[in-house]
Length: 305
Image 1: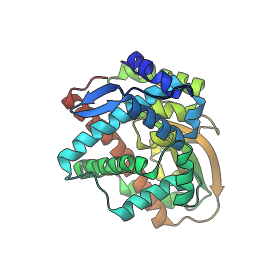
Image 2 (image 1 turned 180 degrees about the horizontal axis):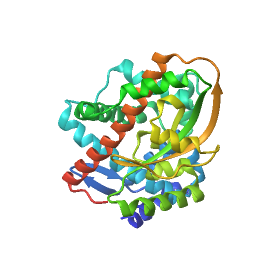
Image 3 (image 1 turned 90 degrees about the horizontal axis):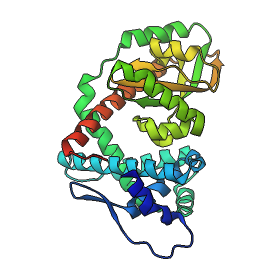
Image 4 (image 1 turned 60 degrees about the vertical axis):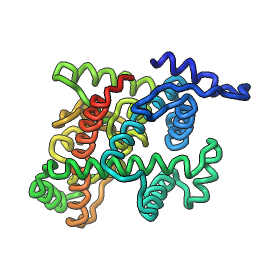
């Protein structure tokens, strides 16, 4: 299938081509994916993830193919649970602002000009943003009751750290699934090999099932007190630029990269740090449930790539 996709799409990126024949690549319960869809996904992913530009086009095509498949499967399931693919306009604008702010643009008009460089419009990406947002709503609706967080332990950690210099970590993540214990080291070695060849950000785009995969696995700055003991122990031993050994979680394997570290002597706002820590742990668990649910939906659809 990958060879077929690459064969159809290789010429899309040659400047000499004047016209393109539309080819159906996938049909997922009447959700059609064409070579043009994959080409547009290619442009979208590169526009929002500058690190992807370092990859060979063939690798980006594979990522684009997998990304658009995931979007269509999510859309099918969303339509079973929601009446329409639609978001409140204010919330949609908020999500768009988060994207262009991350790309260091000050306004939506600057962002639109940037998208034109990739032959994209704001309308092109709105549907993608809406599907991601509705999928997240669906996961929250189905799995919020299953989330387990030790709030007392988190608050205790924050109060203890409040008495000493507070350490903060700038982190990126790769979260992937394994089917058995024997696969843990095998898949970790595969991920590390990919990191060494194409970088952490591009590897996250290929392997991670976390929502941060679309932005190279970037989590941002996280206070030491917001991390659970297992994760904190692994991160504490890292130097900037290093990655952790595989951290075994309930529904997946986590690999973290330490980008930077800083210390703050200012006493922390306990309530603010507590909220951030709860949000971090909640999102981590929801990402795991999202992967489980997506795999179940894909299996039920009967789609094989």
